Length: 372
Length: 253
Image 1: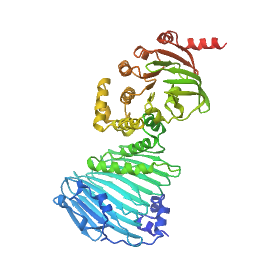
Image 2: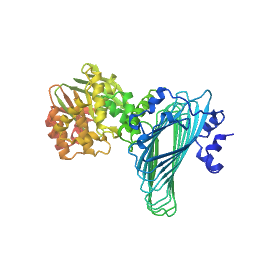
Image 3: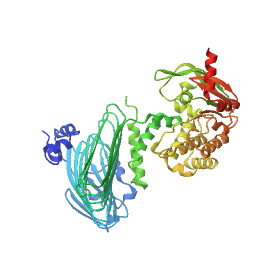
Image 4: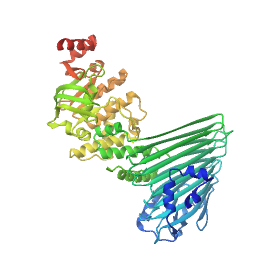
């Protein structure tokens, strides 16, 4: 019995089974619990508001509480000339018709009710023209025993450029299922920074449909306790001279579990495709586990493609090098792990980058406390 | 400043250092020469505190303290610096950030006030100027993608910023062209003073043309088999290490 597998699985029984291979037990455990429907009109504590009320996105922020748009916390005045928002209950469609001169901040807040609850929502993004940066932030109340599910259809027109920065910072009792399918005629870049969560599943399918369309993906997950993050990337090159470049970093401590599945398919006729996938992972404890699964399927003749995946420990030589210069052991570990994570944040700069850095550093500092 | 007495060290069960004794006083430059595999780098690593080296006999006293009891970062803060033979690449960690963290951790240990970023930058620019190094180095990740010569220059740069009391240079000359070698030597010579000592580990005499040592020690098979002044290095250059090895055999017989 796994009702959630039926709900979240895609494809036939075998495909679903394969795609949830490493997370089936976690999903089954969720499946066996009862969820009430989460309420969308909850009030937010000041502690929660502080986590997303960034000065640089005031006036370009939409806040969703348990999947529903919360008008009283949202303000899109600064971007209204380029952005059209249509919403009906838990379904939202964003249309971007021109360059957004500041990032559009979408905040998904999980607020628990009296009992265990769940929400389901969708947010479609359609970029007609121009450059846009979208920040998708998932946060939760520390006690949020919840399951959220968010699906998106994304389309990026020829000549348009969309960067989606996803920060997911969930309580250990909160779970999220996040599925997007992106039809890319222009350029899509994504940056994921993921931490926390009982079960976080990110499915991202990218379809490179037009010649010269491009997808660049960066991401990092940093896990501890019994956190579980499962990332599935599925990139399909179906036009000539398309390119994709994926670089992920994974860090797992204590009994946490990380999965990065990266599948790249170059279809017949998609000659001139350039596909790169690289993932490096560090295990900080003997009980942590990371599964890195790069898959490359090529049906075209003229293709440049490479993939690589490593799972290892913190580099003892590097640790000694830092210590030999006077950096105390615990700081040296934090420095190395932060540096490792930083390599996946190259698309983000300015104040948003500073926020991500500080958040990750704080998260990693906790991660690298001795666990024995 | 540094007194090594009958030091025996094992690595992975094998005895590498077989009774080293060495007395280094402030202001002195000691060169340690020897063929590959004689234990020169092991000595440097043991002094800096690298894991995996088992001291089975002997002791090391540094400024009145038992050096072998200190953690690597404590040794650094006490003024010991090892310029690595193979500096480690650390992608994602910025050189300036790392060096400031290191300097401030040392200062904190010694009870000195930490430098803010402006003070630190001023210090760093001063050192760069003396060493004729481009400030582009500051913006890069630690040794990441550096050429062999750049890594060695970075070691000397770090030494200049951290201002150790005892600097151990582990084959800093290996793999350097003559210009880089001169730069490294200039960096060291600029730092020579009556309060600071150097232990220069090298395979070739060439470096000692530029860093003129007060003492030269020849190490063979985990022991110092001969000590002398700088003329010993020249003799080695002429006659090779086999001369020493033969002498050792004769001595043993």
